[in-house]
Image 1 (cartoon, rainbow, N blue to C red):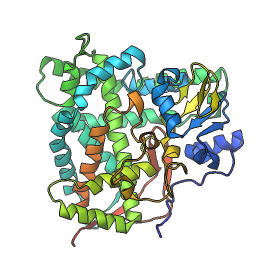
Image 2: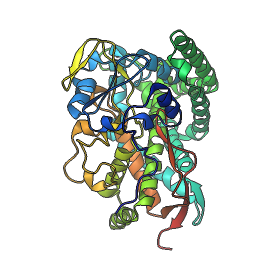
Image 3: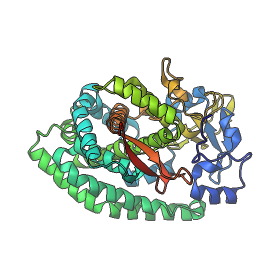
Image 4: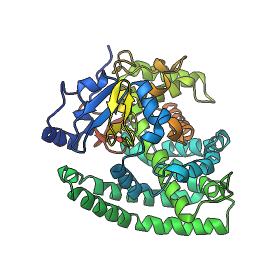
Length: 440
């Protein structure tokens, strides 16, 4: 018998009344999703903004994210919120701007570039673990955040990353505090736009110190390139069709996007991986055996563990909202023009039609034949699938292996672990874990 997964909320048997749903969502936005959403291919939700649909069938997900993607652009309100954080980076840009950015950035994330980053990733993880001691109790969420911050900062900025990384981290946490004030008033016509503009100004002000720092660093690199890091590659990138390069502002926006994708999401994936391994000692023992049998390279089982952890706790629990440009039909359900359409990996990954015993942690799901493409989407899907997926997986698997070769992480208190879903699926508060030296 496997232990339960305490952070996962129990879906309510039926949709909650609006005011109750808003109250519950302030603690955990995933806790309002009712049982029917985990069994129906397309679930119609109540929304103060009009018709709203949660699409979970693989063929429906494919229609929204690939086949009819032009009919489902990102919802304007949410796009403005993301743009306040990310500017016009590859995650937020649309149309020809997005296509140009994608073409220009692709070489920075090709297999050769990811392979070139591997020594930095591994060395940073080993250095980080060198600072640990057996018997020490850590907050695993904070520790994984610190580790992945160091890794992505060094991959992006070489030596300058050790100084710039903490500045970026403080900026993000400060800006995110603005979003914590999202509430019922944000759904009131008239107030909605006013509050959105106020948040955008506040977020912009909180990025001022970082923006000054990164602009000076970009100017220095344009004058003296040659560091061989991701920043150099972004500055040197050229559009294969037009020959254009990225402006300083575009480099900045792409950096912020990559930083969040390469740091925050990987930290979240590793945090829940350690939590799940601590709850499942037999799987942890199998991982250790695989590591011992493969001392010079990450074993396949390590990747399976990460992939299954991301199924149960997808780092991005909801893909940004889409809004139908025209009437459509998904899995036999009519979608009217203007309707909001959501694809939520949290639901897709736990859907009863796609997965046997979906609450069970079983890395063997990823041995042999792969799951259906649009039933597993920790990095999104379609043309806008995460460009840094390969780098993120390499980082997560490498970090897992470097730590697990030397330590077991055991829960200090197995109860009381919760989730705080925002842009990513962070835990609520501290997850205390004791470091146990392997072989001691």
